[in-house]
Image (cartoon, rainbow, N blue to C red):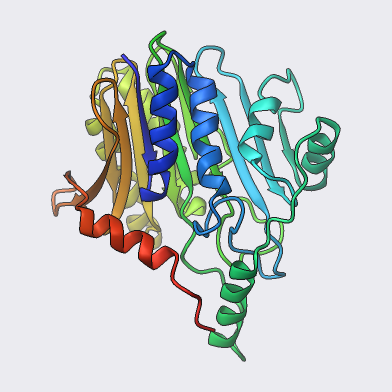
Length: 318
């Protein structure tokens, strides 16, 4: 049994490629890396990789991570600039016994030494979004705002190996050097081949407060179905944050166990995700959270899919 699950519609093409690889016998490490790279390379997805939205100084700083569920090896990069496919750098780092999480200049030096592709990740389209945002807040303090969707994936291969990986450009207009949950093990991602894996997207500062990806894997280890584990973890963190702080940021999680069963939970409207399973075509689903905190899903219509791409590729009006 093999399977993949990923956050957001933008992961669909990557998941489709990963599914082809898994069907052909590839392992979960190769498949999840290739799937994430598909998202990183597409310039119209403005929250990941090439074309990602910049920080307040108009620099694209990228975060990415990879985890091997067999060995529990982790690799991550944060605030790395001018390198394509940070997920591949993160996977390479996962083979290091020490120094497996690198940030900023240190990550860039490692990438250069290892021969990774150096590339200006700031596109003209991203510059246009930046200038537009500057005009919108002229005379006001520049603050980070929405549009920070992380691509996170969990992958299971026929051999029972589970991996997880993430990639993001983080909050639009974030402070230079800001790091969210995506490259933080246990928060943005977690994988254990004996149990399964989980990955998060949303407001990193709040997701980290619950170590939520690890919590979901822990609940699955106790015997909960991935759906129940996701809902319990998201609802508890959402409630805890609202009780203690009066509000909770966006929290959305996907998970898959070692049997290929999957689950999704969110505290927002409009969360989409992609799933591929052996014997089934990859699909995009839309999640809806009920008043009881439970999530229901429906497959995205062709019209929704077409509108999604039309919106993402529309000209930027400054």
